[in-house]
Length: 212
Image (cartoon, rainbow, N blue to C red; front, side, top):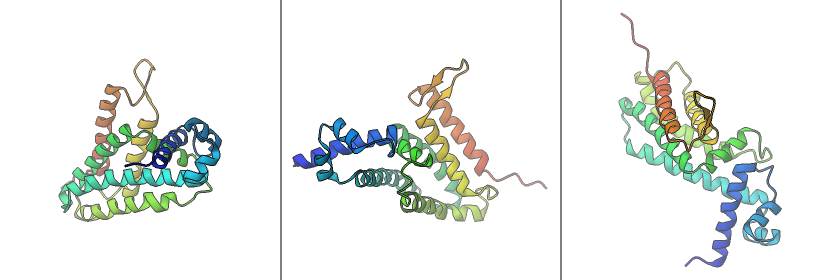
């Protein structure tokens, strides 16, 4: 049975996640988190430590959710044949988009870091993001060598382009033909963006036709 302390920790973590996602680490104080959760600061620190400790716990949980989603896709294609590597990348894009739409706070947390939030905590990308990117890159290397994926674009930037697009869409909006803002909750915007994402990947991944 979950203890009262565990329930309190989870309440604080969920509220802190929402606040860090909305305001950033630098824009959120421990006092704000405590007040929103209905505790005093002493109770929060007793349960979860300092604001830095709380942030590190939240970012680790975000990473574990990211990792599980990515590895689930890769497992569907294991063992990966070089010819199927483009399909896996498209599946990764689809699942990452679905993941971010279902968990909008996670891309928002990483988006704040891209805007130099929490710059005194320097190693999260090296600890969490880089190993996942390296794992994907290693898995598709045979496809690059065999010519199933165009090797002209630096694949690091292909992967980052996908991430930037997905996180930008999920954390922002697009404009319709009349200039109205459409957020990621708009069903047609989701359909149009998903179609665009796959077209973009096709253009980046498909090797050029050889001329005789």
